[in-house]
Image (tube, rainbow, N blue to C red; front, side, top):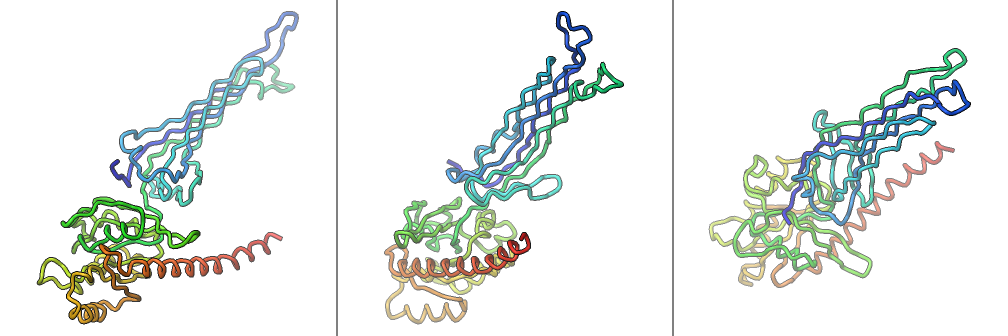
Length: 355
């Protein structure tokens, strides 16, 4: 299945049914009076987050979605049937915005979240509502209201705890294969990853996190070079970035420190908030460096990069990967605890205000 993380759609909620202008007609009941019922309401359109979906491909070719119209009213005080609501199921992490105003309508950030994106029109009133002591035979009724119509932009930002950064062929896909059950394509040439891959890393029975691998970045990515810039948005929800650097590049003239700094500049150019996220350095492919050169190369890279924290690993053999996973889990648990501590006083103050 192809990975689609953007789509444009049009949604048209159902129109309300027209009210009826009718009079009671029965034997032996002359001048029975008005009995026109109301029209039914038009169907609403809802967006529902579904954890079983991971792409917007369902909206790639079908772009227009219409909810059912309300039925018109009838005589004998019969109201029209309301139109059926329409549910559009989307991947968790989808952001829905209005294409004309740019307003964000919904952020489907949790499984099962349900948001109204187009409201159906109300049904019209039948002449039953217009009778009075001075108007005993009203002939007026009202038409149903039109349903809401919107042009929407859908943008998927995958929900992951950890995101992987690095040049093409830095070993990101190999790393995610080593620590999770995900099986992205791996080959000895660059740009083997063409779309984001997610993997669940389980460090203990009840301790796990989600890691995201995006296509490799190259210099000039923030201006549109390469593929990775299209997928940087998928790292904006992560709590930690892992920057993989190949300590033993194919090109003997390549400088890993320079390449690492160029990725940081691309990150800063794209989004300062993304650049400011906690970021650790993973020095990969240490198994390809002679033992007598390893310490010097690692020290040189660390001195140039100045990471918050660093690990020396070999993703192909799995060396050092277990230690990285446990460190990540500890960091994420501390971060979640801190977020709960910040949220608790706010909730307490709201409860006090309500009382």
